[in-house]
Length: 112
Image (cartoon, rainbow, N blue to C red; front, top):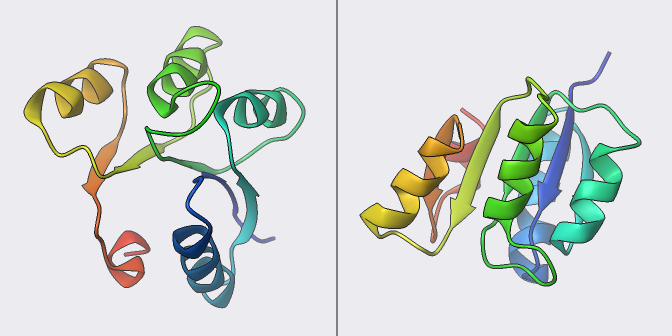
């Protein structure tokens, strides 16, 4: 059975390239473009991994991460963001992110 990934990313080029890499590695990928859709999707589907960009429309990736913690979903979460400052990273880890990858990034490294 394929592992499923929820991927929150609003930059189309990054989303398309990264999704293609994940598909080539055999993952089932659900790509959403804003935080509200991510939360709605989490309420109706199960995932093995969640990848969240922070700066997305409607609800930020950090708010989605807080929601995941609040509803006690025990799913690994990787934050993927252009925000590389220590404060934002600490905020993500305090909300129980499992990893934090700073853009630009290599899709190959993301999937290792």
